[in-house]
Length: 114
Image (cartoon, rainbow, N blue to C red; front, side, top):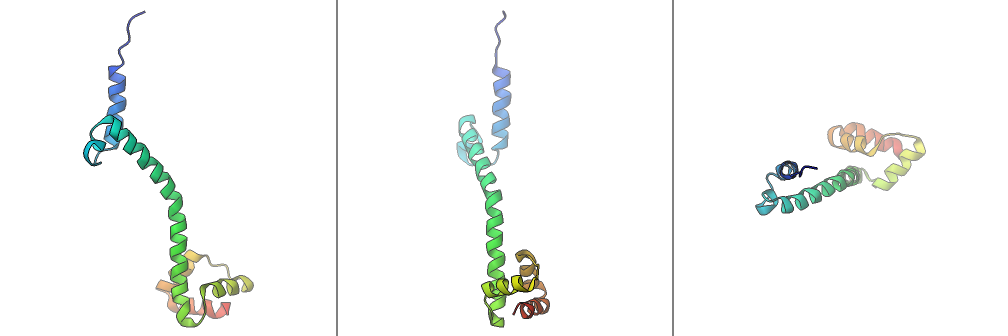
């Protein structure tokens, strides 16, 4: 059986990983061992952040709605409670957009929820 040299295969694999880590600082963007660790960590962080982003945005929408409600004399929790009882089905993202871009429409929603 002839001898198999694996230099080409491993070089191609290393080049792919180092290319993916292009732009990383110092050895993390130049050497295989360091760039492989950095690339794996970046993938894990990206995966977690895609889920975390949804939580972060929901918190932002709630903060915006609360800030828009307070001058009208109602808190966020009372607004959501009132909307639930009246059967008003507007999600938090759209409520936040209404509060920013359409304050008069938002005011009508608040009055309806009272």
